[in-house]
Every structure is written in structure tokens, then in C-alpha cells.
Image 1 (cartoon, one colour):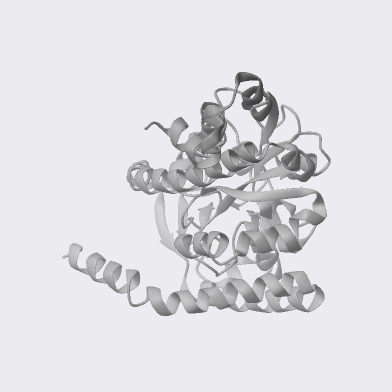
Image 2 (cartoon, helix red, strand yellow):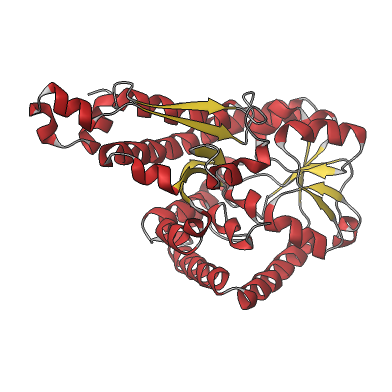
Length: 362
């Protein structure tokens, strides 16, 4: 059974095969959506997630439900995608929830919890522990959108720096391209965070407008060429132990869809999310080898820097939680899930991976 038939079987009533043609036409109307992406075409893994979604949906509906993808700037700028969807300028968008923290800091949780969940934990919280339903109910519906994961990046890198970072003192005055609440943490430590779209990162580093930039990981970073202008490649990206990038849909437009189309859309989004993580895990190791061969210098963040960031992040979470009951509820829920999850993972994946890494280094 091919993918199209699998998605149809999951979403369409079995009795549909016995309906007359006019009834079938009514059950499968022609629907055309526009999706604006925050990620440019040259980032094949990210932009490809949107095109994969569009293809799956079209295949599963015999071309009756189509989603046309637009690159940043073709309809709205990259960082305005979610707002355009909320206002109904487009039916949907592919963006980072964290890009909207200026509207509400709780938007961060749709992407990641800083010093929070790893890839498996984040997916488990969203899909099985009610996290995505909680986000939609408490947060997204207030802004006239609904949201689901569309890709998981896995753990991300800490970014590209023009100079070495040896202590928290080196963060002071650092002009750092970093989005979301992580930028707030760096600001509290004396840095100057910048939120810049992907296509503008390289020229900003090259001109010295910024001193450092984080993006995602080796595969996507290599495509942006950041190693050519900022040689020090730091890890880990503590602000993104994983990264969920999301499909936002206008609430009214989603509710207008036939039930079968809604099911197909969400099934395709879930499949795309899992396939995206698999692709990153396959592509990042080889990209990292090429980057190092091209001159990238790998550096771990010093323990003192990680500790300073961890402590400041905890303070920030508590301050936001005191100010906003929605932020508090989501933060407490994710934190409790993280605590329970690590009690299991330290016995399973962590102990297994730690042994393997030590043994294979011999």
C-alpha cells in the first residue's frame, strides 16, 4: 500500500468507497490553501518539510486538497508568518512558535523549553502527555490559530562565534543572533541579542553587525556558510535540546475543512515530523565532518558559562510564571514531565549511549 492509500485509509470512512460519484464529490471538495514559510528554499530539510506536507496531502486526496508553499518575502517576511495566519492573510504557515514571543512569551513552549526536554521527551509531551492540546487550548486559540509539529530538528548546536568564549565575562557586549527566550537569558548576562531571519545571518556576520549566530545544526549551518566568517562552533545549544518547528493554521479555515481533510492534514504533519528528525540524524554527522575539514573549530561551552546560563534561565522562568498563569501552567507541566522522563532515560538511553561512546573511542 503506498503512502497516499495509507493516509486515505487512516482518514476516510470505509463506507466512502460505496458512495455514488456526486456524494464522493461532496465529501472531497476542491480546497486550495497557501502556506507561507519562515525558512528559505535553500534549506532543503526545513523548506522540504513544508513541501512534503503539501505532497502527502495532495496525494491522499487525489489532488482535491492542495497547499501551495511560499518562501519568505513572497507574501510576508519570515518573522511575520504566524501573525499573517492569525489574521487570515494566509490559511497556514510553517514557522517557529518561538518567533512570536513578542506577542506572548509562552509561545516559546511550542518550540522548546530552555534547558528542557530532549527530542524524544518533547515529542512524547506534545503527542502523548497532552502538551499540544494544552498549547492549543490555553494559548494558540486566543490568537485565532491552531498548531501542530511539522519537523523536529533534534538537539541543536550552540552557534558560530568570531571569538572564543572562555567565561561568562565574554558574553558581555556580545552581539548574538539568537531568537526566543534564549535571547532574553543572554541579555540578562550582558549580551545584545538579535533576531535575524536565516537569509540575513551570513551577511550580518561578514559585516560584523553581529559577533555570533546560532541557527540549527551542521546540515543547515553548512548551507548558510557560517563557518567562513565565524570559525568557532560551540556546543551544546542548551536552549534547544530539541527544536520543534510548527504548522500553524488559521482556526476558522481549519474548522471549515471536511473531517477527512483535517485527519489527512494532521496525519501528514505527524509523518513529516518523524521523517524530518530521521533525516537530520542521518545528515548531521557527515555535515559535521565536512565543516571540521573546512576549518570549523569545535568548542564546548565552558562549565562556568553553562552554569551561569542555567541559573539565569531558572530565574527567568520563575519571573514569567509569576506574571502569567498560562506560562506558569505550561512551564510546570513540562518541567514535571522532564523530571519523570529523566528518571527513566538515565537508566535506558543515557547508560547505553554513555557506554557505547566510551567503548568506541578506544
